[in-house]
Length: 152
Image (cartoon, rainbow, N blue to C red; front, side):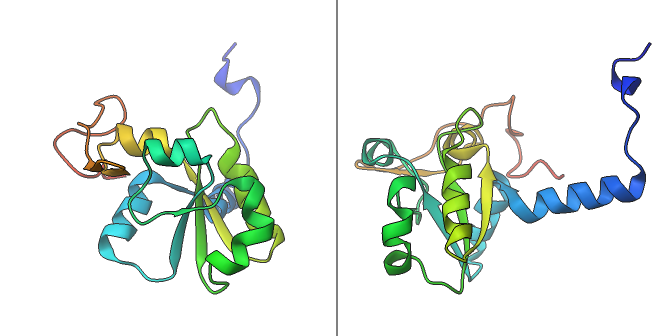
């Protein structure tokens, strides 16, 4: 008996709807990086971590707005006519999900950046620290080391 096929795969039209819906709610670090590098207008990236975490390093150009402060401060910090992309530490943390929920409840268009800060760093993208911009080599288990994109 197949472990994969022990539950039958979804009908292709149901699968298409499911995966399209996931992409409406999520984005990944490579796509966020590409859009930030290209200067795509209408995106605001929000780091939902603590002040200590922000100081350790964050995405260049991100806005710092911890999850617990979004309801009170979002309207003063983030324009209403943008798409918000939230991130937190990484896949083991649901802080970006909580932040995305808070923005959605306030009426913002929002996506969660899967992988979070961890995968941003692991893919070799620059981070901002108190000492300036820092770039670590890409982790070959998470990103191609000879290219800026996986080509997917």
